[in-house]
Length: 520
Image (cartoon, rainbow, N blue to C red):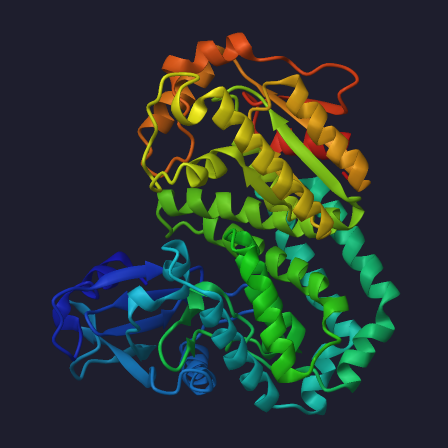
């Protein structure tokens, strides 16, 4: 679509209903024009191999398919297919001009009830997650089955899907995915498929290959009553004809990606209770890797599009790399023995950034001294403490209470079989020794990630943090030196020490840590 057409569709008079505002959202395959009460989705004339919208007849057909298929889970939202016509101003959804394209017309869903927004605002409880699980479970139980659909659940089809992914991502090697990571993922996938042919055959025989949704993630879920799950895959049957485990794997992966892993357990409990599918667990990680990889591919394709604004391309590139690291992380987790990691470093040295990056990839719990300190002192979230160094909630007695709390919580996590990162300064050798003792008693591997950087970089970070309202830490440059004076650097004999220069890129530091841990 040329620039003139795009601009004309940003005019309110291009639409049959009264509207004051129109805005454009782009994906790698669609232009979506959003009015006050409706949305109009026009398919881009693109061909990615797995998707072909290059002719007007194809776009009309797939618009009709989008309406038909999405009415399964959102019957009242998808209104139909409308014509895009030539107009004096360019193009319009009104008038009698020549038909030049087609669009799907939908009712707008309430943005404040979108799952991604509600999760980011902390407004989602386990009850909503179970409601989503029941909705998907009921949909899967009623989803179409048959021999033609079963063909897509056979090992050959699963292998072909992966081969296509690998071929299409080759041109992004060294850009959004590193060659070594691609090799790790490819090697694991090929071995898993080869060694689990019987497992895939059993899933097929038990009737779990169905006409699914294919695109269940939090941006496609609205917590209305009933729950609305929209924007399924309409453009390629083989992405929708799949194992029901692959369908929910997208949602579970998305929870991981957005740091909401705690909701995975209640979702799976509810889903398995409703469907009776207790045999999905052996294939679930395989499909979560697949979902993360495909999302990395989609973001890579988006960042390569000339029509996408520069700022969106930058975001797409970052997201693509993060999805690929998550895909790799699902594999590396299988190599990791029971483990506890503690951070060690002064304020501004990059402890929390390193801890969060490791936890994201390895699926580890994080216990934060900053968060616990605020909770123990009943400090309102977002309120920064300005106590002098060693005073108030940073007094020696309060500090010791925080570390006792961390120790107790760490022991509980390890008893539950969860791998753990304790994110704290650990400036005292005695505290590090205590946690090393807990690791030994619990029979888990123990690592100390010692973060450091130039003073100038620490100062820059602390000044920036002081401007961030949501920052949990109260660290600031004025108390940096007093903490440095008290810091007892870790040394030999304290455990497996991993020095980390956080002036280097986070991804490089994570790779170095993983190599020392001998899982990369």
